[in-house]
Amino acid sequence: LSAAGTPSSGVMDWIGSACRFASDRNDFRRNLLVNLGLFAAGVWVARNLSDFDLMSPQPVT
Image (cartoon, rainbow, N blue to C red):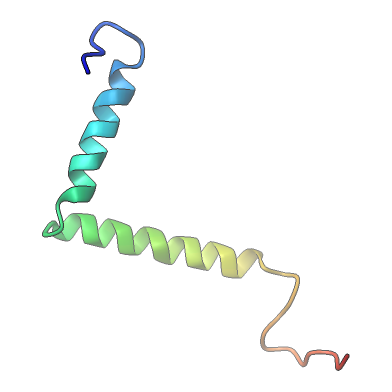
């Protein structure tokens, strides 16, 4: 898979480096970034789920 010279070569290099980065299970920085990313996603979801508030009394149906 040689994509040198094409506009997608940078994308292929990035995907390859991301795969190597994600496959290294012993990388502390990878674990830290993944955990921070999951935490940020959870905070974002919690802040944007304004349809129901878990701390408010729910209406009885």
